[in-house]
Image 1 (cartoon, rainbow, N blue to C red):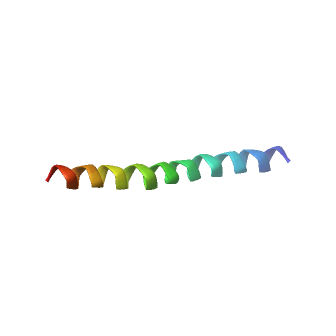
Image 2 (cartoon, rainbow, N blue to C red):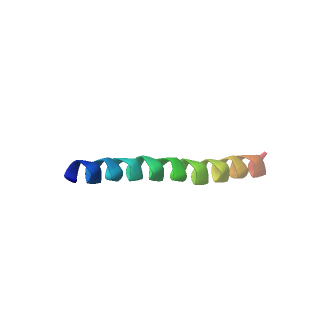
Length: 36
């Protein structure tokens, strides 16, 4: 049971990392396009 919890925790961390990339990168791209 503990192993399952650790696996879920790691997946959550990885998922958050992807979400952050998906939200931050488009914002950065938009800002760069505004500057041009």
